[in-house]
Length: 375
Ligand code: NAP
Ligand code: G4F
Image (cartoon, rainbow, N blue to C red):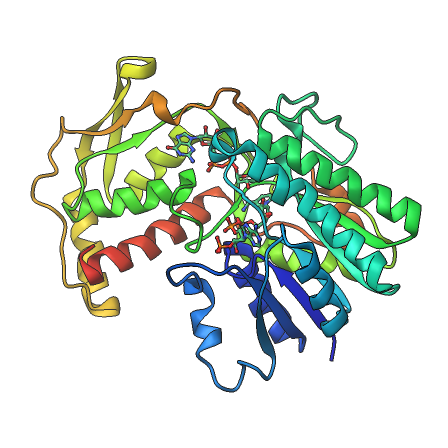
C-alpha cells in the first residue's frame, strides 16, 4: 500500500484527491490546520466513515509555516508521495496579506523540500500545486510549459518562487519534484469567494428570493475553467510518470466572467441584458422563461425534496448584477488559455468537462442546496 501526504486536504482539490487516492488503494495522511471552527466540511463524508478513518485516512495537525512539525511528520510517516496543495490561494486577498502569502506559498514549499533532504527520503515523489497565474500578463497565447512567466500578484510571485525551487531541488539534489501548472478548475466544492462559485451560489439565492443582487468586479477577465476532479487525477498522473517533469493542465478554451454569469442565469430560465458601462454597468433581466423555471422546481421537488420555489419578485427590467470596484485587483490577469498538449501526449490526460457542462453542474448543485435548505 502506497502512502501519500496531502497538504491542503480540507480544500477543494485536497478533498477530491483524497477520494481518488483512497480509490486507488493509498493510505492517506492529511495535514490540517487548527481552526477555531470546523474546517473539515469537504472531507466529513470520509472522516465520519469508520472503515476509513484511522485505517486508510489519518489526519495530523500541521502548518506550512512550522518547519519542525513538517520534519516530524516526514520522519513518522515516510511517505511515497507528497502532494503540496496547501496555500493562501486567493489572488485578491494576497494583495492584503502579501507577507503571509509568501511565507506559505513560497517558503512553505522550500520548507517541505528541505525537510525531505533533512530526513533523507531519497525515493519520495513531490507534487507542487503550481498555477496559470504565473503567466499573468501573458507573453504568448495559448500558454504552455515553454511560455515565459510574468506574475501579476503577490500570490503569483510567491508561486513563482515555489515553481523555481522545485526545479532547483530537482536539479541540485535529484529529488523527484514536479510542478503541475494548473489552469482554473472549479466544482461544487469551490470556495465561495472565487468568482464561479460566487456566481452560482448568488444566482441560486436570487432565484429563491434570498438575495436581490450579485455584485462583481471585472466582468471581462477571461479564464480557462475546467472541472476539479479531472485535474486531481492529472496530479496523480504527473507523479506516476517515469521522469520528474512539469506539466500544464487546461481545457484549451477561454470564457469571460460575463459569459459565466449569463450562462448561469440562462440555466434558471433568465436572459440578461447589460446597461451602462464600467463601474455603472448593470445586468438586467431581459426575459424570464417561466416554463423552464417551473420544470426545474417540479423536478427538484421530486428528485431532491425542494422545500422552496422560485421568487415571485423576479420581473423583466429588475437589476440582478452590479459592478463593485472593490473587487477589482491592483493588477489584473486579463486572459488565460492553456495548451495542455504535452500532458495529453506524455500522460494521456485531457480535460473532459467543458464550460457549458461545468456551469450546469455547479448551478444545479447550488440550487439543490439553496432550495432544500432555504439559505
Ligand atoms: P483551497 O480550496 O483554497 O484550499 C487551500 C488549502 O490549503 C486548504 O486546505 C487550507 O486549509 C490549506 N492551507 C492554507 N494555508 C495553510 C497553511 N499555512 N498551512 C497548511 N495548510 C494551509 O485551494 P484549492 O482550490 O483546493 O487549490 C489547491 C492548490 O492548488 C492551492 O495551492 C492553489 O494555490 C493551487 N491552484 C489552484 C487552482 C484552482 O483553480 N483551484 C489552480 C492552480 C493552482 P483551511 O481549510 O484550513 O483553510
Ligand atoms: O475566481 P477568481 O478569484 O480566480 P483567480 O484569480 O483566477 O485565481 C484562481 O485560479 C488560479 C489559477 O489561474 C489559482 F492559482 C488561484 O489559486 C485561484 O484558484 O477570479 C477569476 C477572475 C479574476 O479575473 C477576477 O478579477 O474573476 C474576476 N472577478 C470578477 N468579479 C472576480 C469577481 N473574482 C472574485 N474572486 N470575485 C469577484 O467578485
